Length: 209
Image 1 (cartoon, rainbow, N blue to C red):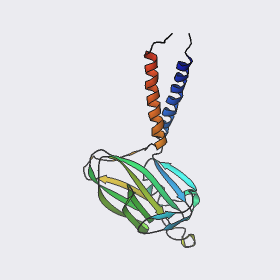
Image 2: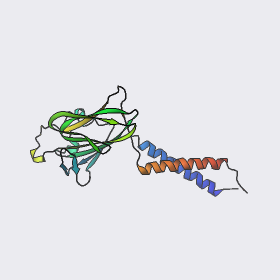
Image 3: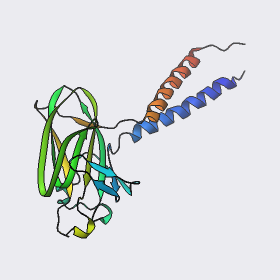
Image 4: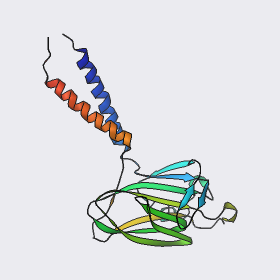
């Protein structure tokens, strides 16, 4: 005797499991994302105002790819003047004070959980820093960067780029950069978990004739 509802539930569970696995896999790559803008206004010392939509998006493993890693000559897509908005998430295991060190040329601003922590501005490569307390858990970190000078005043040899490091006051209490699931991803993962549990119960149930 066939049980169509049980066959359907099996297919649903399989599809949901695949979606869940795909989402979990996608969340592991490029946890730090940088949007590039060509229309913006500098609001030093408060941050950057981005206009319109991003012209490019860059995915990296951390906040240290656009400074010394490129010899302080960062020009995404060959742009002379541009702004960028970098967003990532850090996990704090033990409550501590952490020093955010923002190095770079031109203007950059580090935010933690939406609060401005380090404003930095310099034509040459220099650095600014600030120490704050962070509780255990996941915190959102954002770095806004821009070439404050208009393109007409941008000499070919001017330094460009930034990098940020986070130093704990307790040795070894380093933060880790993690991917933060989107709300939709969390929902699908939850559905997948419930579906798999439902399927397990169906396997244990006896058919009624």
